[in-house]
Length: 596
Ligand code: ZN
Image (cartoon, rainbow, N blue to C red; front, side, top):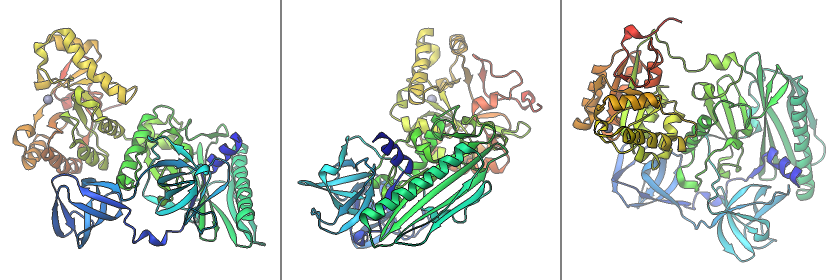
């Protein structure tokens, strides 16, 4: 049984049914305008014509949700509202989640609570269904946009806090998507069988590395066996076809990868399966996506996945709130752009999305990998000290506004330092993770924002240490290296404590006064006016106006040739290094080491 389970897991199977007939008329989700007022627009764009404006609490019917915009119906009007401002709830009861049996069989979802009724969906082993109604010995379940009935005895109920996980927008991938994929390494092997009701045409490569080749041919054989058996048992007389296609990439002289996908089609049903193989050609070893790709830091790729998922998932609409773990990397392959993570339909994601792909670029995660690859190394973010640098800093957060700043930073591959208040850290743990996932720095702005010069050494220390450990409780291993003292107030005690804690003290050269003006234009102008090589700029990620200013200033600074770096990155170019206990408000360009 264990082997079978392992086989099924490695096959990553799930049936994705044809869209249900009723998908269009059935309103699966309802929403409520969450806060303030919200525009209903003609187009899914913030420049779309405003049809009407609705107050908080207005109920809407959700017709579609792409994660950014919802197509909604309010009264007689139909238009678009931003997903993030809607509270979305399923328009059907959610009783929990169930898993289909891990026995390698196909489970039929039926139109009624009756073993003789029409099959509306087929789910294979180990897939997760949402239970929506208890019907005696049957359970009504949802798989994507399809509802159907399953015998209760076949389902294992998952605990209430079970959270299957999310996506990427490159969705609905099947083997057919790989027909035009690059095939840069290996020699192609093909097998076909065209007689009888069950036919197949499979293509896969041989790389001349025995471990990889046997893994791939074994998987292909498993697929043929499995689907032929399903076909014989359930679909005699009906044509069934299996397709296997692949992508094969040469990353550099050392690493190669192959992604195999299978598609089994019978009647209205489709089954997709994925297999990922990464090879270290020097040792001939097959690298495991879970264990071997991210050997230096696993938290960053997880946070990147989590952010990708939050952005790409159909909002809370599908009821999924999954937290990625390393198991998600089982279907990860190296390419020359980054790591492609394939998320097989229904295993982590809502089945309705099909098989999805998340791309983690080397600029984001390369430094966590520790692979001996010149190619990856050449794609890491490199700061050029001969070009001007600026350290933007944001105090007093995290807050609801922080994510907007993170988004624009990520978009421009820029970094900043977030000087957080310790007592807010736990509440905003998601923001803390996203700050770090984006390669930004967290600095300590004390636990409760006191004037440190009024405190004893031991109280100063506890203000700092309590904050730092709140951060490392969320991101284990993360070390806070910078103190931003509230009001910039520093004395010998503070310097001594920082020296003992191996931290530097960051003041600022440019004060945007954003907290006082609360004016986006003025804040933007203050940033641009103060911009020069080596400066530290003070802002506060508490205000919408500051986030507005950041959205405008960051692209502009990049455009002017500035590299936006963290405080620690900036100080790392100081000719004397960053000296613990020292106060910095900038690095004078004369002190920046530009040579090797
Ligand atoms: Zn402050």
